[in-house]
Length: 116
Image (cartoon, rainbow, N blue to C red):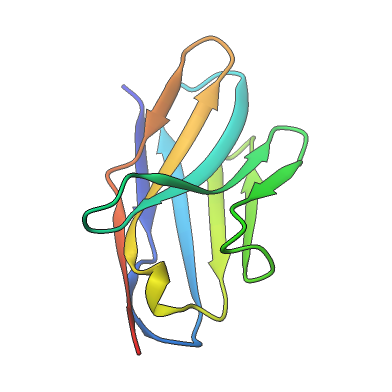
């Protein structure tokens, strides 16, 4: 059974930094994308950043230049370095891994709270 486990969330002051990590256990084959999404209270889940198996990245406009996604396909891990965090970044952050054949998987989420 595949499980994605996120870590690294917490309470941070505006302007600070956090690094989120996500590791997959179980058998995942042929990863195509790994990514981070977030959901703030009362809002829909939204894309934060994705990285392809070839290393191509995509960012939401709101985080571009502040957040950096990185990943290791072989280790089935993905990271999100969050710098210059703002109160509007407060949300539950979810890890996502998408495969060519097996569909996609979600983590349970990690809370990021930014104090102003």
